[in-house]
Length: 157
Image (cartoon, rainbow, N blue to C red):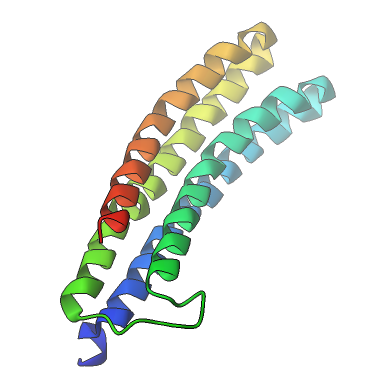
């Protein structure tokens, strides 16, 4: 139990939670890839537009990894000079990771669903790629807000 209340452990746990946004990205990218494969099987010329849609849910994983790196750098783990954190300090890092860890994961999954629908849109009407991208990008807004919240919290520590 003492290990679980160790500030360094809590900070590293926070970095891990932030990086877990990659789970949502993997799911979202997979959803779009599944839809895109069917469309490209029918019309190989649609590979480019479907690939653009598939890439969108991958950004949340990048955002989570960024916050994880910032946390690990701030606590000195990356440089090999790890500071001794209090339980409260570690808890603050853990709390700072939650916006991108949770919202990033969920938004990537939902963005994947919207982008997969966009793939279906361009399968019938390829000229509507911009509309499909806008629909999917709207979900990204909340991932960016979560990134900003986590970034501001981590940098305030």
